[in-house]
Image 1: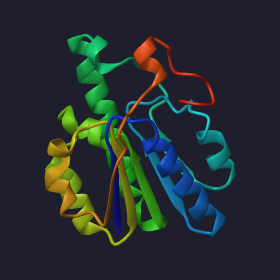
Image 2: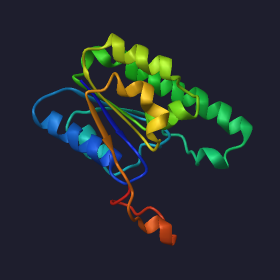
Image 3: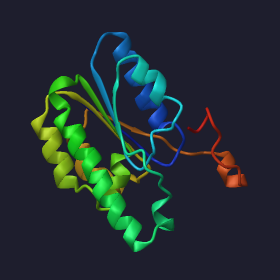
Image 4: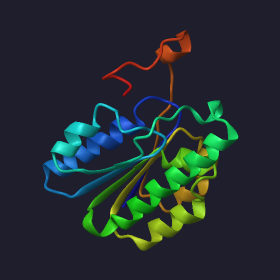
Amino acid sequence: MVHIYYGYGKGKTTAAMGLALRAVGQGLRVTIAQFLKDGKSGEIEPLKKLGAYIICDTQPMTFTWQMSEEEKVDINKRMQNVFEKAVQSTEQSDLIILDEILCVMQLGIVSSDEIVKFLQSTKKEVVLTGSVSEKDIIHLVDFADYVSEIKKCKHPYDKGMLARVGIEY
């Protein structure tokens, strides 16, 4: 089945990682591919110790809107590589989490056609997350069995508070 966690509220990755924890706790083989993140989020090491296979690009990165054109070309290649590794891991996984893949799709790094092709080719449980609007993913909703919008009602970032270790990452 396909799960989509999207929207602009906090909790998309948290929900996906909670599902990963549940799955490894029940003996399922889990692959987590993180896009546009450097692998330093607090959930990565514990899930790795529990047996999850982690795919991420550990090179330093910044927000895409702060990147030069050269950096954008580089990040496109790096994120395409993460996607290819995730697709290749399908056979040895029961659950595949593509964290922030919807943002990568919105940026044009991995096309929606590539994602649809992947979803059509696998019979595994797949989770897609990202800070996008419903109109950005409407074509993927047909392939999904679970679709959850995470809506922000209030967030400390609105008052200028930056992400905090252990809470936001």
